Length: 308
Image (cartoon, rainbow, N blue to C red; front, side, top):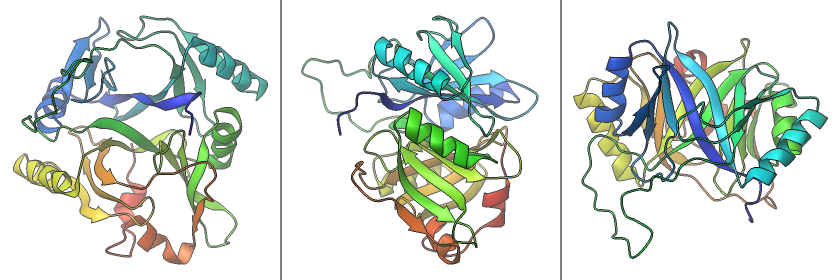
């Protein structure tokens, strides 16, 4: 598909309880690259292959969770157009000036019906991936920690996911990829949406409390790298929620685990390509266990209920 609007997930600002412990975890265990610190105390990271300055921002707080999730758009004209469309849809927007976040241009901030803060931006400094843009070498796998390819997507929890779906589809141009129905066969329990050709760029689950984070996810190259990540987690005594295993939904292989503050993260590989002419896949309530955990074919109560 021609990507002319929202391009991809850009950054997640995550709340952590102990900054020193968190920086150690995200650098030594996750293998992210620290790219800066600002006057407010936030610490910025990117993955080894990302070219933009940051994709993960940590902010010290007395409670874990996510402050905001952002998407990069094609250019300034696209940012202006989407801001106008959001306002026409009845969404209040706020302009965050360039430079408020390190090496990042002006952002358009708004609230989803589920209470989550979303941002759109068009500009972020290209710091490269260490290989250059002329005659680059192939990357040799010699790196510290899990070292994912990119920050890939997030899963959020809240009440009005129907309103979220309408906003993402009608205003931001996302495509519905998969959904899970409740027992009535009509109401969505969960939806997976993409702004690209990936299986999903954001997902959401119906939940009694708004503004909750289930996980932020990072992509790896292969199933072998997922298993390597599990070894690194065990060696570092990381709290693993579930996996390594496979999803039926999106068909990716996965591990879910927690950072030192209790924020759930995921590393995964695989998943299929999706294009706007494809029909969305629907999972029935009777098969939701197989959809979420394809191998076990049953739900994990803690996986569904523990959020930050």
